[in-house]
Image 1: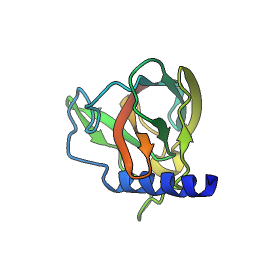
Image 2 (image 1 turned 180 degrees about the vertical axis):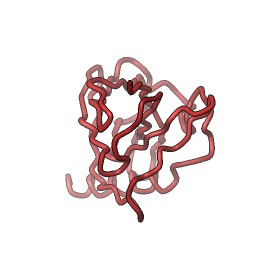
Image 3 (image 1 turned 90 degrees about the vertical axis):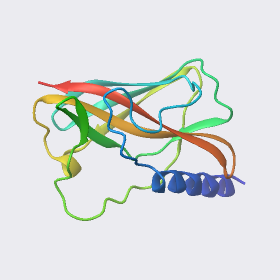
Amino acid sequence: MKTCTALWLTLALLLSIAGCGGDDRSLETPAGTEGPDWGITLSAEDVSPTGLTLVIRQTGGEPTGRLQYGVAYSLECLEDQSWEPVPYVIDGTINWTLEAYEVSMEDSTEEEIRWEALYGSLAAGSYRLTKEFMDIRSPGDYDTRTFCAEFEID
């Protein structure tokens, strides 16, 4: 049963990543942030030019199922009042592994993010890390939303 659930969750995550994106680079919010409150907030700690500790908190909100996220993320830099993608330092397609991590209700967790292999060492500036989350009610019945954590590199 666990294998079947893991396969469905992996498929749901894969479908959400394939549908992710959009051209909304507005200063206020990234694409996919609209919708019901799931009680998720992201913050950045121990920031350096090559990584950070991402703190994922869940308090309150009204999710309709189990909240999950994967390892994929993206970085954006604030340029002329617009969020622009940070370019990769490597050529080719980035292939993320498809683990799914459960968000514990009324709790927080930390994830170490090291981006030097993908983005290199970042210059001073304002950045945000975006990450997609899912509210899974049952296999094939889920919603996705993107959350972000803004941070500064001095």
